[in-house]
Length: 465
Image 1 (spheres, one colour):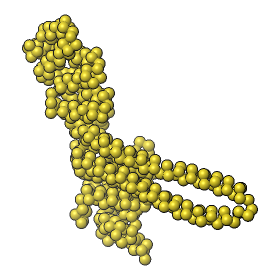
Image 2: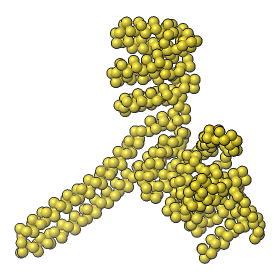
Image 3: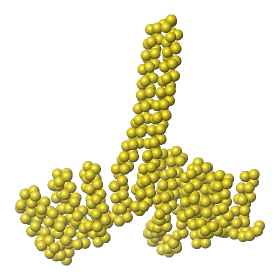
Image 4: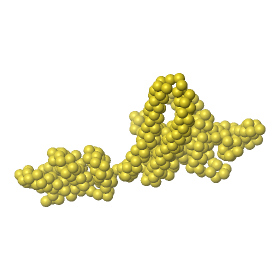
């Protein structure tokens, strides 16, 4: 019997050969179709639960799993990446079975992607709330502390000075996040798409849509962006197809009901002629009117759903350049060319305020000595041009140049950039035919009294001259 065979295999995997858990998970998937148990076993392997169990025959010993010695070594040569893919495939293909088995796939993947896995839980310790953990998973369901991939030893270390405890903990958390992101590699986009597919198969379409949006706001690689975006578009297209098929089926059912109603209405009308012809005619007219209104309301609701789904798909496709630009800026926030491209994309969409906001954000994000793909002064000049020519607000252009040239709100690395800003200010006043103001600004700029001080001011004055 299946249950007897499973019990024997479980006992063997628990007491005699812990490495057999991988084969047992494979058997649960392929032969016994116990997908929930397979997901739980794969989670134990990734979590390295009971990794210290070893022995032969009927004698075996247990030890606490540790980060250093608790690395699962597959006898079949399966890597952790392959285990992760298999685990994700089982959970996304059978979300209800995995949830019944106690596998919180959503929480696990989010903890992995955000780097919030509890490191202390992996050593079998108790957290601050006193919840017991075993193999990195809270026994009472309060914890997701399991390792994703092998961690570097530099990410761990005890705090020696109590006064610096908070700072070191923050540095350790940042290091853990960087290590996880590095170890994830190309798995990041795959995990996001698997998480969304998990909710789709569970029937939570709105939650799946929010997962896709969250993924587009979190990923930092173009490859992962293409993977997530294509899956998102495919999901929206499948929703449209399903709604259209549903609407077609409803129309066919309505046509069939209408034909049956016509036959019944004709026979009823013939029978009621001898009784009360006027009363029957009035009732039939009322039924026709009410039936048509109800049918129209249903068809209008179905067509509205289709139109909404199509609008969502079109809006997503239109947002692709901006979303891709945001990914590139997350890779390198000091890319001047991408910031200017972002403002142009907003201008093409007619969103002038968003374009100016993007350039204002760039002045806060771009560090002059780290800037690439353009000079920082081009950000200022583009912002001034939008205020002057698009918004027709010359005063806003003056305020921007005053902040840069007089108040030193941006620290340029090259004095040539500051000289271009001074020259742009003078040219702005010349275009407005403020001859005296333009002459005064030119004199002040070459005097070195504004825009810089000390040695930097001398270099800036020479550059302006």
